[in-house]
Length: 232
View 1: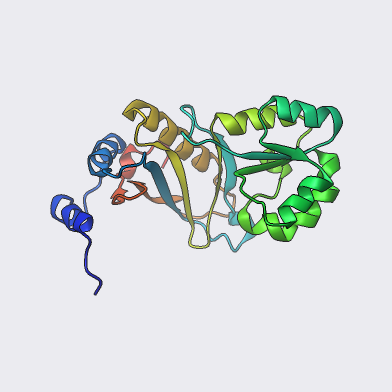
View 2 (view 1 turned 60 degrees about the vertical axis):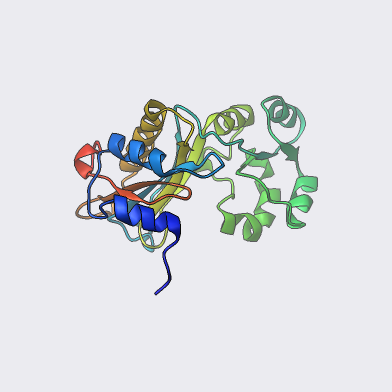
């Protein structure tokens, strides 16, 4: 058995692994244990009653976090002409067409969001094997294939995050930083949970939200009492 780190020993001594916390209790406790020298990300994990191997049980969407993410989102945009200029004016980090495609094929993929105008999808499509595995492929259902690239850039920069269920039926995402106020973190968590619940697929049977946990980047995960999760 692997030895526990000093931090893990402290957590084991002070925390009850079986306790169910309210969201507010969890946030207060997480901050007490978030002692790293950097501003830790507060993360949420939701275990859902879905099997994403079936198309009618896929859960995916976008949500704008009211208090933002606390992260500088890097955004790339495929566009030409006036749309390219609008994307740059809105704050896009990189804008281009074939030149941007070549850059990404060369391995320059340090972006959090990739947006494209519909007419650019012929170019973007060649990057399927590169962008797909990273979850960066523009998608009209997520608002990342759009003529209004300026608005798409603005909402991405303002704190819009994407969520997508993984193989084991789990969705996880950052919902802010340790330095955020508890009130702002609570707003973000409520918005994220609400978006996931509203994205319940037709193929989901039985209980949809099965477990919820909140943690910091380097801290322990705390189980949330579903009675405190609106709509669960």
